[in-house]
Image (cartoon, rainbow, N blue to C red; front, top):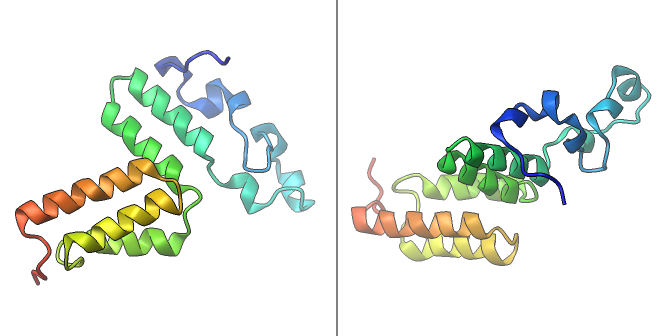
Length: 141
């Protein structure tokens, strides 16, 4: 088992670069200008991974920043979600865009069922409750 990360491990790229790997398993040391030019590095090697975001969440929690940690955990769930769905979900969260609580609950259900993004689903459900309470389902502008 790997030791828990602490505030002293921040920033990971400088203190624990061994923990940072791309989607295809390349380490930071594998990503050099020569390897890029030779075509051995792709965009998949440069994209953030759920593990890197989970590590950032662990450090944030150790620093006494639980809200930031939760944001990193939600971000980790979003890594595998298609950009167009993320953007349409964001649009639905703007006040007045969703016309009903059910529309937001449908988005939450998609996060939960299709993308296994439980934290994001709960976030959208909380938004649906708040929007209903505050009357934000009516187009305001």
